[in-house]
Image (cartoon, rainbow, N blue to C red; front, side):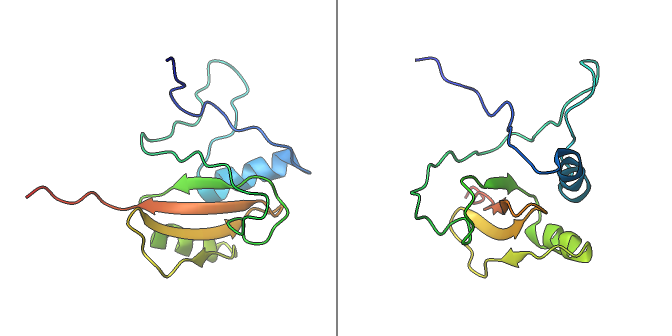
Length: 126
């Protein structure tokens, strides 16, 4: 069976698309869609991606009425949270570490939920 090889884009509606795009660029380092085909697009690092439809009653989205949530992989959750907090953005770090890593939650300026994920480091070979 032929399979997709990854996420090629994420498109969503926004009240102020330009301002929201700048927020993602400034605070999370995500490059905006280039204005020409000669310019490069944001490149993600290779790594795991979870695709998980949730029940309509899921509390994973932290009580919002939104129907989607972005989860971004990060190298250092504590440094990213400190950077966001320094910019006045509220970030809630989950105090628990899980077998697959650590998580934090925040919202963009339009109230869309975002989850940050620092994957667990693989165990060292013996």
